[in-house]
Image (cartoon, rainbow, N blue to C red; front, side, top):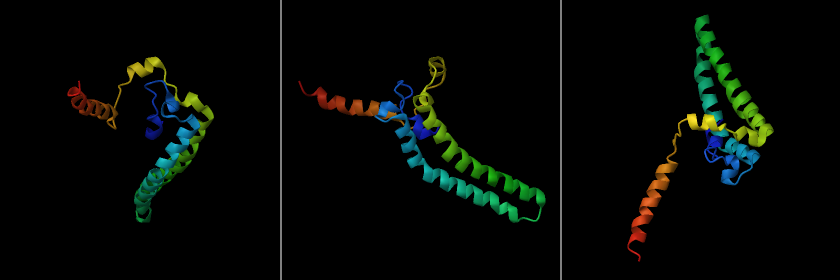
Length: 132
């Protein structure tokens, strides 16, 4: 599941609805935010790998051509076409995570949401402490 789409509250069981979105709208929003990054990265990697195609050695040519085509297929065929289509077709089921797997997986807070809530709570506590 793409990272931006993954952030829609699967730990709370709310899925995309945890942020007030339908699963389809969450997929559309995620694609809207990620499309430029995926496109830019794919084009850069394709250009780098494609540069090896102009070498004289046929082995090096194939080592440049194959990854360049693979990156293009992955970025445009899989990440920007197939994954959003499957997520839209599955709807809410695309966001479902079995409870046993949810307990077994670590709760990674990559973007620092828990820290932000912790710091916000701490900053608010001294203000209210003096008010009686």
